[in-house]
Amino acid sequence: SEFMSGLCLLSLSSLTPSTRARPAVASATSSAPPLLIVGAGVLGKLIAEEWRGLHGPDVAIRGVVRRADADRDAALRASGITPCLRSDLFRADAGLGEGSFGHVVFCAAPGGNDDYSAEVAAALRMWGGGGGG
Image (cartoon, rainbow, N blue to C red):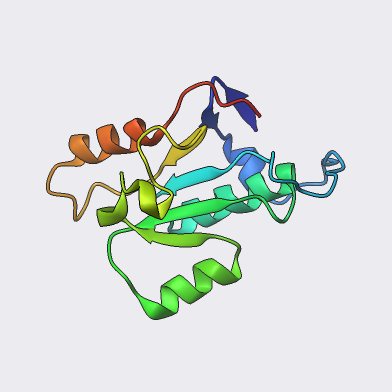
């Protein structure tokens, strides 16, 4: 994985099983960088797994989904991702205020989005810049 200015760039090789050694991760603390994944599907779960491997099992990961689905949401929680609705973006009371994440990954498919470029722009507004972690 390569992290540059808070934007997460993952190579396909980092998302496939390998024998490369992972750095040891100390117990996660509240200083571990939270991650927002917009489009928490198959790719989003793989990214969350990689992030957790880098920052520890207790790192905060939020996964944005279009609509509530009890089975899918339970599966996300079981994999360590807290699901949140796209309609909750920018709600500070939901922990989703503008600029509240140092790391944002956008991996939502264009299908089902009336205005895909607006969805990308909304995700970008969730990024607070910097990345620091």
